[in-house]
Image 1 (cartoon, rainbow, N blue to C red):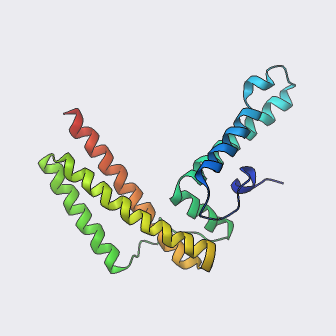
Image 2: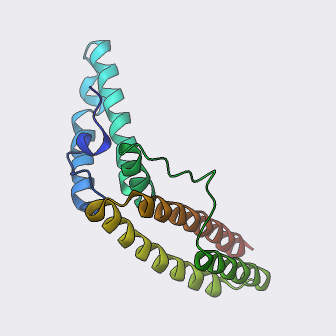
Amino acid sequence: MQKNHFELLNLPAKFAIDAALLEKNFRKIQSEVHPDRFVSAPPAERLQSMQLATSANEAYQTLKNPTSRGRYLLQLEGIDTEEESNTSMPTEFLMLQMEWREAIDDARSAGDITALDSLLGDMKQEASLLQQTLSVALDEDKNFAIAAEAVRKLNFIDKVREDIARSIEKLEDN
């Protein structure tokens, strides 16, 4: 039977995970299934080690990122976060999005890297609050509707943060 990401990396299936333990368990699996250890092994064993290394890498990448970890936990519960189809957000969050977008546009136009960095800090803080909400919703309350909304918000913030980082890179290159 296929193990889920948490089982594969020997972690409890919850949002609040020990990042150091995640890293340690991932490194342990990677060292055990490294292709160099299977050079003279039969083809079936080499294939199996490669598949396990690939699965471990996918699990690690998913669990390392809070947004994807929350999404994955919801998927394990059979819940689709509907990030592509459900774009409804509370008015307060929509207003915050609009403020961020305007501030980003203004900072880009002015070539103001400091302002963009400041926006990244604001978003990091908002993401941290959402991660706390997600932790309580998933690990304690089992409130999957709140958790799904938090994942949708985090996904939006992740995309905007990437956009800002690209803008900063462009401004630094000029």
